[in-house]
Length: 488
Image (cartoon, rainbow, N blue to C red; front, top):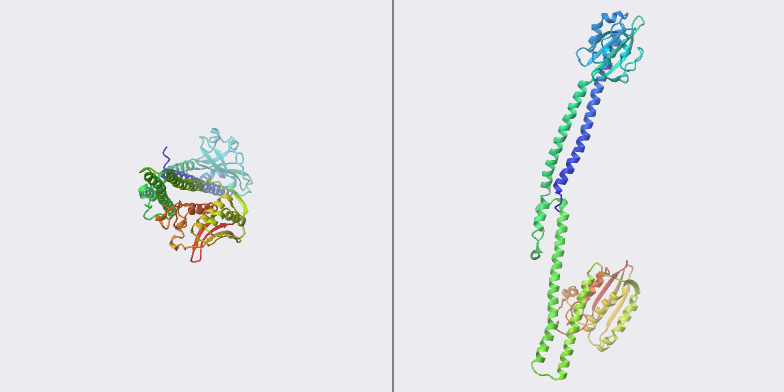
């Protein structure tokens, strides 16, 4: 199933983020505007109420309220949303301006002179004549037609000592309508902004991901026959440089491994063909004419020797294949490397005597490793050294230890190995003198030999399994193979 587009996913995520930002910013702007409008209207109500109280305090009696009604009602003139009503000491509404919608009760706006109109006033906290008028005393209620009203009710003392009442209110319908329109515009602007942001972000993300498409196109050119191809993209962003470098390094490893596998396959086929060719050639010669029993026995012995060589080659190849598997099992244990070198030397004592070679063992060290693999590595080195040590010479097996490593050295006398061959002799099937590969022998090669050419490769694999290293040193005095085990 095809996965979701990364560009679309990022664009959607960016759109959701933009929507959240717009909602937060829009809500903040809406609440800020609402608060500012409310504060301004409250200030207008308070100033009008203070002005009305101050004018009323200049009147001598309640009759003056009606006489100066125009002057008093002029306080709210010019603002259709503002309204005012004044009540005499008996509670009768003496004057009013634009107050038809102010009272919730229908009779309150048109009461007669005998009505106690204050009984129908909204539930406001009455401010005493001696108290200061502030925004805290403003109250909210719903007018006759459901309009939202904000207002203030205060007493005022006339010159004759009587107390009249003043109601100043504002119809907030226009304000709520303004806020509703503002909110609708914010919603429309936010929706358009989110859509535009998603579209632009999708286009920008696709443009920004063009190097990825170029990398994919460059990677598609890599085939089995073109493993040397590398990913090349012009002007790679810094965030993708590590990816390109990692992919090229991976291709380098794949190319190197494929080349090694190709060489290994070719070398294996060549080395297996040699003993098979020897057996076939010997059999064809023997069948060319009648032979004696001794000649046939000699032929069978020769073929058996070639079969042994093939068996060792197959065994070594299988070991190397198993050793490279991640789940290859190692049985680690602690042992005395000096004692194990002595046991290995005793095992090779018969072969050494036949070759007239001495096998002294020196040093001692405690080592933690797989004992069987350790024995195999040292045995391969020792068998190889016996093959190239001149008669009457000696092969020294030494174990030494330091604070961070243990070194096991197999040193033999003989012809030195050229420096250019010292590292390559650990490669599989590598031989310094390929012409001698048909010589029968056992063990493995130190440069030129008739062995399978896998012994030193096995030694290196064993050391890699232990996290150690193996290297060779050679001069006119001796050739030394050194196994280095790091302490954990």
